[in-house]
Length: 214
Image 1: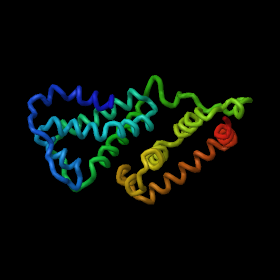
Image 2: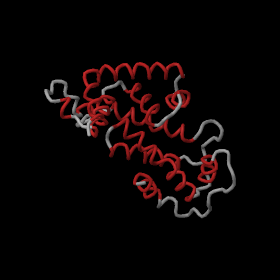
Image 3: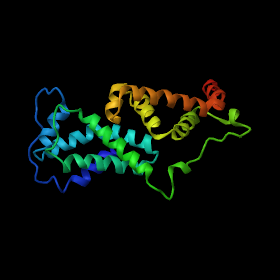
Image 4: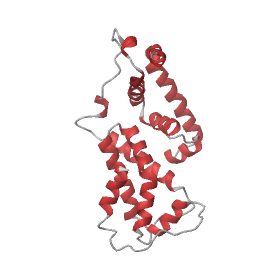
């Protein structure tokens, strides 16, 4: 909700003259109805669209970037683009959620490629030589361990795994978002899983142990 509030706060001055509400009825795709209303500068339709998608879009961005501030900026910029380009949406070509995920993913990839003074790659790595690794790890640390391992994957593999497991999207949906083929997605997922297993090979016993404690 915080991301949605930021987007709407940015857009408030632009939307002051809007006075029409969203189109009612039983649409096949409610987003298309909202986008048609947004094309007419409908403030309430834009608010509803942002509230429908901001949280999931932010979740995707923060999983890719592993930086909350950057993720908020990416989502805000992407949703503001909907307003600034209102009237250009072509209904029936793609689902809005697919388009938004594609824009978010591409912007995150571009951001990851830029030189940074505090690079994401400087995040703490998994400690391989800790004597007490098995005994000190707790169930709450497993997600952090997996997140760090995911961060070491090549970008395309990591994004495919995030879309598949975190967002529960099908391979065809992932292929559409990543603008590639289903077979390419299957290959990315396979190679990503293989690399994750390799990274976590010496940590598997620690992970299993953490779930049996308590």
